[in-house]
Length: 111
Length: 112
Image (cartoon, rainbow over all chains, first blue to last red; front, side, top):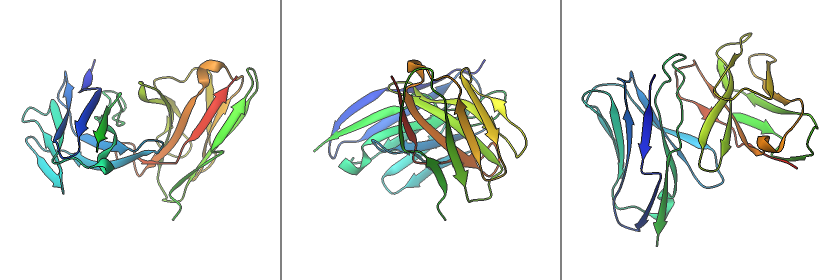
């Protein structure tokens, strides 16, 4: 069955440093969604990637979907304290096609 | 638009008690979901309703029941609460089951 791994589980950075989280799948994905959850909050949709090799930017955030559609990444340039939270990739599950959430990557930004 | 609303926000139960978590959305979405979130475990799907009149089990359905009351409302019931059900519960909705999910603020449940 489909196995999806998101790494790292935690990342500490100094404010101003860059940050990247990776989502790797054992099978080809039809699409992948990314969500952010602030501490004490609820997940909020960031973006959906569909095409092979797709790159999308939202200000300091860059999202990529691999050429083989088996991996994806989120890169944040020059982190700020407002970037603190957990970032989830959510590829569709094999059977139901519902986006499934793993453990996410928790980003801690030190001022 | 209120989006997705959940009640209550906080709840403390004793083992064996029952309760129903309420969820409502005003976005005319077809699909609704219930997740639980435990520290270090991410979000795990309990039950979902792809459309009004249908419900299906997710990854961790044991100990829970759901009701899709109408297109707007999707409730989660704990018949006999156990300490292992201490968690944060999120309801979400989407236009269709493959689409972007919109989450409610969550219910923080403690079972003693």
